[in-house]
Amino acid sequence: MAQALHPNTAGSLFATDGKPHPLQDSLMAATFVLGVLSFITSFFHSLHLLTSWTGLVGLAVGIYGQWISVTTRQRFGLILGLGAAGVGFLIGMAHGGLFGGVIGR
Image 1: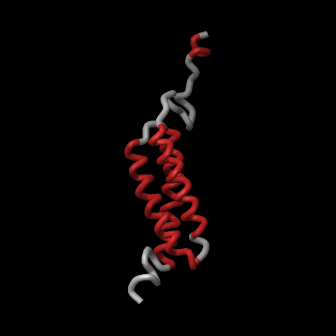
Image 2: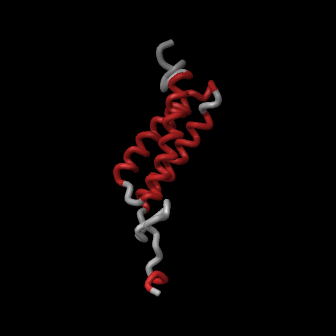
Image 3: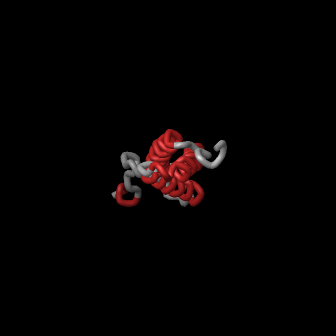
């Protein structure tokens, strides 16, 4: 009955080491929220400033989160957030960019 005391988490996608990682989990959540916000606002042409800035910040936070991530669960969430932030950032750049319409007119 040793397996009852030590469950097998090696095969799980959301495997964890059983220790708390508040910084990494916070970065994962922030990346995911920024990525989803950037992706959703990319459907509206007039919101290109919000889209591009949240995408850029989401990419920066996500890259740092990937650098210090510890578990597969964190990396999985970060990749989802980074993908959404990247798509949103690129669409926001195509619609006018970081300063489009504010500087240079």
